[in-house]
Length: 302
Length: 272
Image 1 (tube, each protein chain N blue to C red):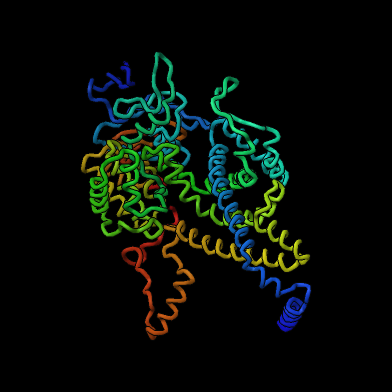
Image 2: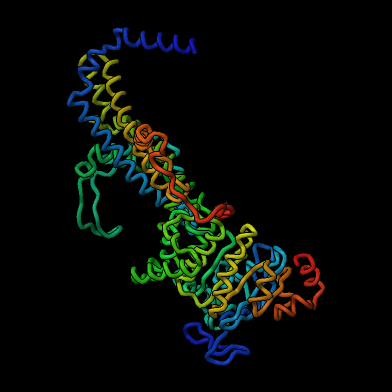
């Protein structure tokens, strides 16, 4: 304990008193308009990429589990390509898409086109970054969703089919809500990982995100370290907010899996203060569950 | 002989008077899992309002046969009708064609099923479990469905448990909710797959009571069970299966008191 304490104290001392960190510059630029705007871009990229990544991931997972061999092999090849190549490479590729396909249009396959677009105008660097990040993410999400679906017991599907429900309905109403408990923790990982992966969009090249912007300011000041710290603090702050969000989403999908939900930290604090006032009384009496005594026995079979 | 009209409905079938098909009719039902033959030609029938109990050692094919009745398992040969309608297939000429998913789902609306491990939906309350299929599959009016669901919960002795999640209920209570869930679809036939085998001995009675009431109200039931007392008291037919064939069938009292086959005798001597 003492050794750890001494080491921590030494570390703090070296960080605080080392002039290379330029703490005054950190304080000056942390809330700089350019940096907060860049943080917003990073957040937008994260949210959009995760949204489309999850959506496509669910579709891919269902394709992989489909009895149709064409659907499942298409999904397999997709996963093979997008998990097997670096996301940086993929981002460079999407940045170059307008070179590969200068224009695209809607029309009859191999026939006349009705409308045509200049790729460069539609697929801006921001759009290219979202596409690149989403497609890459969907390959990972597909496996997470598949694991979730497989974790739901076969009996659930059987009971639902015996009630006359159709495959899609069973998936949406019965299997996915239960799979969520398994899906959410790794998805939280993915969101946080995505937040940081957005710093690679410079490959597109998109330079309005948090990392690129902090680099830009740092280069103009000839002080790389303090701006790096500013960016790190922003990333940390956003991650913290996301983690709180994950906690509440997990709680929501824990419905029915526990007899009584554990209190949130907020409730714990309130209960603690309430308990102090109540003098020995429990602030929130536990809900009596189940009917008579000892009736919960044998519930394990379900 | 039996013939079918366009919809696959049996016009007449062997032994049954025209216009009143048997509730369940199986002819030469075979089922294989890979190379393992689980059902080796089952011929059985259940009439309207009858309770048929199926007993036999594990691996005898009794659960598989039950699951064939609502096409949870596909049969490999033979024919199976529920209320005169061919289950899971359409017959054209001599050939059988498997029905589309939507048609199979449609057929299952007529048949309720209760499982050994209850298989309640854990993320829904007791009431939610019961109203799910009537609302989402049959699209019946909300108020009617909820009223019926509450009445069913009361019927199985669980009023007051509407908002309880399955994990908050005992095994016996869960199984009774599962029975109410099946009844909410107003089936004409109920299948029970060892409904009390996963229960603590002291909880078996409450589930059997509900089933006994159901039989008394005239529900047609096929019950795979190890409860000989229930079979004797409630069953109209008792079927003993072993090795994928029906070894012996008859009135429960007669089969239990005076089994004709050596295999039945040795099985009963172990379980009674």
